[in-house]
Length: 419
Image 1 (tube, rainbow, N blue to C red):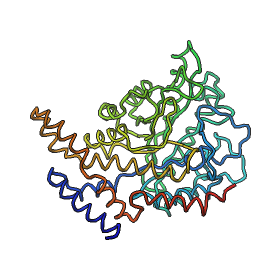
Image 2 (cartoon, rainbow, N blue to C red):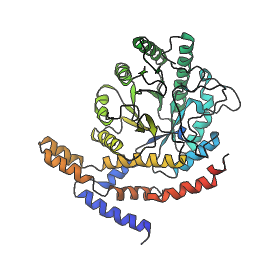
Image 3 (tube, one colour):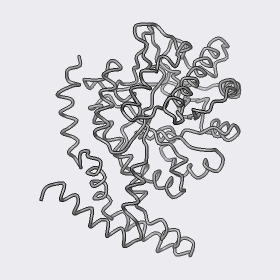
Image 4 (cartoon, rainbow, N blue to C red):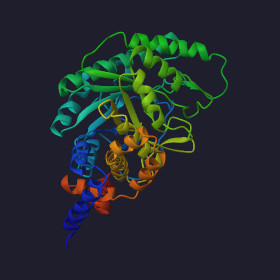
């Protein structure tokens, strides 16, 4: 019996096992097939981008590691994303930062970016059956410093306001081109390394900047705003805290982005889903993994992501929650990091979709808490992995650990030849 036959046999048994607790596995697979993941472009090149600006500053972000073979230009990055597509099932999205434009040999500052710099991305994405999302880029620029949209210096603040306005206009054109709303995320690193006595001032300036940025309404893009607990070298104070953006998002009816690495390690991001959905129209996720102080490790199938996925499905919120990845690990094979992260995310949502939610809700409504807890525990041991293997087989992608060989071959053929 070959591997495909084993996968089919295991799937048939799993389907019967799940049917016994009221779960339609075929319907589950149809739902999983439609779960889109917005793949972040910046894992492929360590958040370098393709600008021609000199004297680039740090300003709140850092990729660590020196594994060989990172993408050095647009063609190489696109090649890497195309390879990733062959390792994961389903149709997905690609999330671009503003620094990834096709600038050629020209020097284009952040307040000069235009839709024309991303026309090639739109055409390529259409050919590759990808939808595009977008981000403004406030870090890694001589004018980044500690404060951008919250900077008391009006000239610097206006520079970043103009940049973000242009990014929204680019997102609008992307959404129009692909006939699907482009989600534009706004994250700024603004804060202070040590104590500040001007918390209110900086937050009031950030609010005014956002009001100016969002004054223009668009139909083909959606805005989301992302908080963080702290930034690198800005550990004592973050202007755009979760409280700030939660209040602003609820007031202005903007999506709030929940990055799994942007909260205290003991906080549950899953618990925030039901609260936000009551007061904001939708939610954007940046699926990541925090390790101590660093927020952007490769996503694994751990308790945090599994509970997050289950909570979204329990809230019937798959249509209201957008799933994006946000990690960058330069210490391992970058394509492998993509494959692990995307597949782990999909596995988490598969486990959520396979929950016998109708029976669990019935137990809860009847006050049968022992039965509810017992069933939750027993589902952990059900053969969800057999369903996952079948999902891979059905999508004609590597089953189980077979993708390791594919990544190794791509490294041998492609990335190892990049100096």
